[in-house]
Structures are given as C-alpha cells and as structure tokens.
Length: 147
Length: 101
Image (tube, rainbow over all chains, first blue to last red; front, top):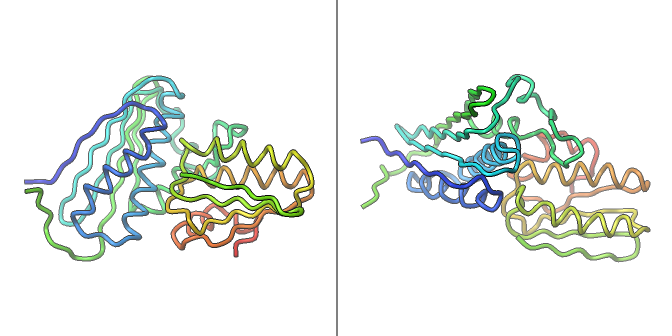
C-alpha cells in the first residue's frame, strides 16, 4: 500500500509552521538526512505561504496538502482554491513579486525549485493552484510503518 | 520564534532564535525599522546562530533592511548562519549586497 497523508487546514499564516511540522513528521519515518528535512520543510513553507498571500490574498480559505512516499520518492502537492496564477512562467521568475512594497522577496518558487528535484505548477485563474513537488531521498532507510 | 535587538554605539544587532517565516516576519521587521529610523545606525548585524528555520520571508526581511540601511548610508551583515540557511541566502544573490560572515 502506498504511504499517503492528506491534510487540510485554514489559510492562516499561523498554520504555516503546522504544515511544515506535519509534512516533516510524515517524512521523518523514512530516515531522511537533516538537510533533506530542512529543504522539504522550506519548500512546504514557500508553497503554503504562496497560497495564503497570493491564492487567497490573506482572506479566508482552505489549503490542501497531499504527501506520498514511494520508493523513497517524496511527492508533495500543495493546493488551494484561490484566485490562481495568470502567468505561471512569470510567477516562477526569480525575484518576481506582485507585492514589491510588501517585503516579499519573490524567491518562493526559486527556493522550491532549488530544494526539490522537480516543481510543477498547475493553475487556473478563478479556480485555484496546485504545486506538485518531488524529491528523492538519498539515504536508504528502513521502510516506514505506522503501527 | 523570539528575537532580541541590541544597539551598541552605531551597531544594531538583531538575534533571531527559532523559526522565521511569513507569519512572524512582520514583528521582526517592524521592530528593526523603529531602531533604524531612530537614527545613528551604521551597521545592522543579523545574528543567525540560533535560527533553526528560515524561508524566503527571511530573504524579504534582509532585502528590505538592506534598502532601508542604504538610505541611511549604512551596511548589513549576516553572521553565524547555519549552512542550510546560507544556501537560501546565496541562492537569492544577497551575498552580493550584504556581508555574510
């Protein structure tokens, strides 16, 4: 059976740390390196922050995370039903931000892309955004079991 | 996350402990800015020795403070950053505009 975790939580900035901890706890059972855990936590934080600030523009909403590990490949999907991204290519350009005065660096997708093996963004304006990230854990550990 | 801001002469040292993200970046930013705008700060030092997590919100804080310090003719330094946080700092190009020790 595939090892899958699905969570949903309010699009509030106070939930950013919860999202990081939940995903890292799920993946920790595969004995990743500290660097791998830190990189995955950072990528999750970027994705969730993107949904809060851009997807829902700091208004109410729900963020969905799906996390799956198969053959040491971690797949994380971060989804929202927010306003979507008009121009995905531009959004993924380093230093591009829609909010230059709001102290955002425009580095979110760059960080995700650097720390994960692959980042794919699917978005429809008015419907929402799905960020699909994958990363293969390098070190071989024991197969994770919950019980 | 908690942070301390210590001003000694014209040097302002900001030490951040724990996790720095979008949620708590505003409080850090606002408190630093009060001190900088208070005047006589020539060097702003971020001490990251006790920082356990940072995402691009931290980059935003550093970039914003770099621009503010530039207006006052001052400079920004980052010291004691853990390796993985250095990686974020380097990927953002911040190394070109601030001193990373």
